[in-house]
Picture 1 (cartoon, rainbow, N blue to C red):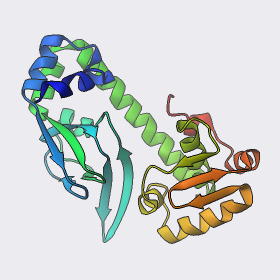
Picture 2: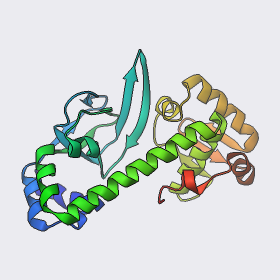
Picture 3: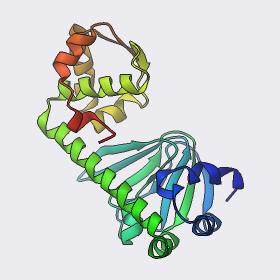
Length: 232
């Protein structure tokens, strides 16, 4: 793997505190590849050969069943995905494909497992990350089950606004069809929901969102830190 990628990986919480010798061993065993958009990286059900690290670009995690498909998460740099499968040596429960041209580092699962057994700080970091993944999945389930589609969309927009610096104008980071799937909606339902949000001061121009009635949108959304706060 090119040395210029290693510092970015080292700064991830997963690798930050681990022994330097063990980190170097993982990097020597790793591969780095550039992938074009809309390329399927892994398929659910396949063996988990690699832990993936997104260095640049964007990756969609999705699942398919009985002719239906749903977006489960969208991964941006610098972050890992499919950690649990790599540790358990189990099959992938999700598929993954690039949404943009992406640079991905692939760390062999057998090497990750070997270092897990040797390095207590790395093992603890893995437990911490898996715990956060579990908590995020719980929050996402609560969002889907406890809120209406309009409330889910309103809270998503408020979260994106916060991440963009709390300005009144910001951009949606993914295509609307992926956003609809992520929120448990059809593209048609998303379009209707965006139109309904006009009454709450939400204007849409392509990927750009403008919010003119902040308090009214927040009253509709009723944001809840136990669902919406990514730091918990």
